[in-house]
Length: 409
Image (cartoon, rainbow, N blue to C red):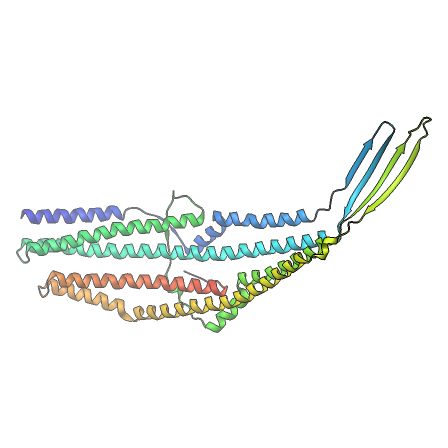
């Protein structure tokens, strides 16, 4: 009787511990709301936006004309005043063109950064949902075993089972509770990551909401490759890089042109034994002799830079096709696994556990056989959730690789 009371007290303690573990509540958040917060408040994304602003400011800088120069010289007998200005032959226009191309590249880079960020944030949201549902599975498994342990303590009191069997169910319940605590830590770690993506501190934790079934899609590989070749931002950026390289080559050629310095001035002279004032207006032009232009190394270097960017753009086209194909094959394989689970595998695992529980309570099987059935039931449920999460992540990766986005969760 003393052992029975101890077992009952332990079961009650475990149940009270579970109640404490489930008492904390979180603020619910939908997938759409989460992505809006990421787009508006993610600090890394906000930081990247400054690259675009700086590139746009660079355009204004390159639009500036050279400053004129004013020279004044004076001695005891005369003074000289000159105004000089440097004429750039097409260099300013080339610099502005290059700055515009670089700004456009920065805007495309920002778009690509956001697409990557959005996919990462969406995967973090899916991971948080997975960890919450895994926590629910482990809590339900513990609750099942806690009830069974309490039931076995009563059966032990009545002499229907041995003390060893009663202790076995208690130990199994205690083990499952440790898994509940561990899973709670993983869930909280996952939802803390959501705060980071949203640019929030950890003062408020969010409970992500979503349904795996909304992620189901039907795609064709050829269609996706076509979308990717037209819509991938990094492909557009690669082609823009070729334009930027051409702008750079135009600037290199413009820089080889000589700068012409023009000057106008006024001079007054009253030197001599009998001073006689003399005024003089003068003008001049300076044209450098660009013997260095015989060396065409800088032009060849700029041309090689163009050729390199063209080769990189062609290589990226092949890479995009490969990425889409690989993402599609993974999506296709996981879709088959999802269909297998949805074809009745979960129901079979549930029916098996119910049947084994009934037989155990009827004394037809021992506790070890029931525990095996219960663990199999848990493994099937956990594998189902993991597979659904991986399938949803594969859909997101496939859409990102194809340059499209219509994710609803």
